[in-house]
Image 1 (cartoon, rainbow over the protein chains, first blue to last red):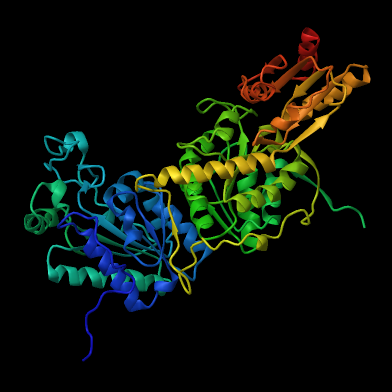
Image 2: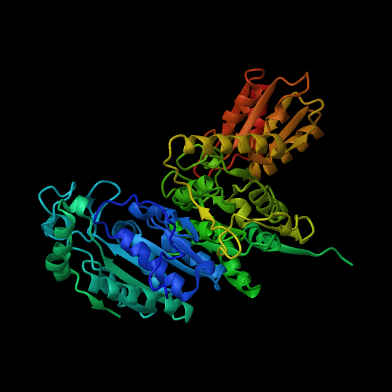
Length: 242
Length: 352
């Protein structure tokens, strides 16, 4: 009988440290499946962020490095420039990519570096215990916005994908979500495209992934999925941005 | 054939020395007084099929060096004092990840934005680690344009040998002044001697490599620190370098490094001509500090005089090295002030 579903070779068989309902595990798996499907495991180099996903290398079975908080794209730029034959990608959260690393993000995109970026937007800082992220929604309560995010004090949710889409050297940006099986399939397609672009030397490609953080959203997993669908998507609409 | 001599600034010599040493990657950000270096690399790295990037910030530049080094390349950045402060984060991560890399600091006056005049006030920052955590960079202090060139080979070799960051500590005078330079590519160890099985190249034919400095397991980070300290002890035993002048019969010994040692050398020679028994110790490596130079001083030595373009930083290492056996006097100027020959002589006369 033909085997049609199996554990990705690029994903280590290990137990997860992520919370129940967290999107990271799902997204790690999508990346691993895509790397298997494209046959690039042996030439892939991943850059893990600072945040919950710093331990991504405990799950992925290919070469990985950490980067200082926000500096993943500086590290990635150099690796790709000195090893253009390798496939280099970063996997970064909203705090890493859109707060402390905004400068690196904008300039790497503006140089049109031939890189793939997986941008996990869960509207909160997870690893440090649920503080406001640049993508935190107005009214959303976090440990540093106990009364909810207020536009006059903390500004508006930062739409990094839309910002980056203005840059001429950016090849591809799409926003996807992990809140339902249908959306996961679309997310995989987009992430695969972002890797294919790099293989084809197309330049900077970024996929923003709306991902649940039930622990710091203070809701059970199934409600977190509904919250993405009913609330978060209104602020961060899905689809191809560039 | 005539010797292959050219006239070059210190900043350009750092660049050409790095290229001759096999530097494969440079990232930098403009700051005075090291701008000739980034410009030199912008022109000459691509010419030789090496990577040059003008980074968006000092943070990006040092983290690009982190990336290129993680990928197994000889990588460097350069800056001046305020920019080097920004690089400390990346240097600490490189220390934790045991990544080699070379950082040139063409020091200027501080603190803060300070000025663009030469200074030696980043000695503490360079020799004590500079960023967070228990670590050391190897620190080498050239005193001439020739050494600015020659020491780049040494810097890359030591970086690869110990998987350690190396800071080449110059100052605005050294960076800006032009001197005749003898080009030679022969004084560097071939890079092939330094295998990098840990580098990120893609995991074909081997288990995946991970570059990391995060260790959450109980006792794991302590074990890493213990092994780092062992490495630092080895470096202290093996790599301390200095130059001694008239140490057989010196009654007063000047201690100075870098540009300040050039001026001090003139003082020593002039006073010797007048029959005064002056000697000099010039640390070449600032970390490891050449303590050995201070252990066998002549019996007639009565005092040491440390001269720096700072308010007194290396003087602490000299005091630790002599450990109370000799009085250690200090002369220094800060904020772009450079102790002149006459000032040093006046100071020597006052302590004789």
